Length: 358
Ligand SMILES: Nc1ncnc2c1ncn2[C@@H]1O[C@H](COP(=O)(O)OP(=O)(O)OP(=O)(O)O)[C@@H](O)[C@H]1O
Image (tube, rainbow, N blue to C red; front, side, top):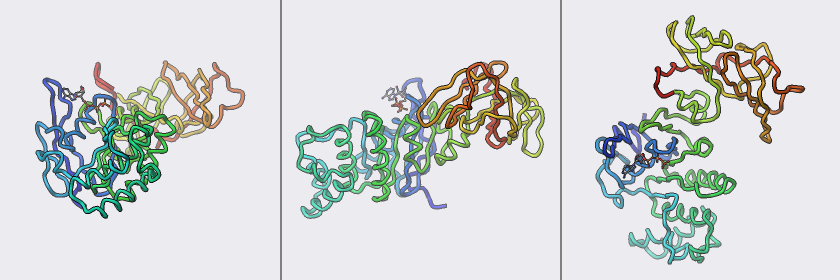
């Protein structure tokens, strides 16, 4: 395997008694787009600030393109940053903002003109070149911020929730645009977000962070379909959970006793282990005859436009969510219906310790 383009090893950082980053390792390939995804306070921004040079880790190293940069000042790292409120220069025009870094580096006038034209084109802001920054919308300002950061040809782009102030439609359009732009330029990027849809849409790989650690680093498909921990299961996408106990294990296939009946799932646990079962709602169908099947009571039907959500109560109180294109005909709350899903779609995790976090 090629050495990582950005290689973070053992990065830890505490503030007082609080450990905010706890021995994070992250290897990013050249040209890769990685999202740091996690709830507020899990350490995403702290990790990004360490890479940017705005903060020093207590322990650990950061290597970029084979050079250690752990203690290098930010302006000597060849890293572009775009933050949610990363201020553009309000007294300069759009083009002057994009030209700023190139001028500071003493680039020739023609090079500056060509580069500014290229990046304004890439972010679709050519028509706004002479506008004042103050006369731009939030989305347009973020396009300029992206162009300004890219214009100096950084080795790495760091983006911290750059679209969180934008409305949903604009945010989605910007996500697709940014992905295209970074692919065209070939820039390696780390993108911080707490929005799972944003991470799933944009990333080559996602680092799911929780309490200062990376819980799982994987492709969006794997993170969604094969979440490594109950936290990743809960944080990315919707899911149902059932508690159970493994009663048999044969050739990596488990038989699990739950209050709703016996279920089978791939996994490796010894009989007697308490486990939590996770199931994605679109993997469950209403009807009998699947590899795993239980009876449950329909409690609510929620219309969501393209899909409906069916909320069920399993025997002994577990909740099950089903997503379908349409509600089963004639189904009304109170009905007892069979639900089925495949064994391979049944995710199994160790049950959390008594009193521990799930
Ligand atoms: N300079 C600081 N001094 C003290 N505590 C800090 C400092 N910077 C961050 N923290 C704390 O570290 C924790 C992690 O912060 P961080 O900004 O990395 O989280 P985050 O995952 O980016 O969250 P958010 O999505 O809310 O920005 C938080 O509890 C925060 O209050």
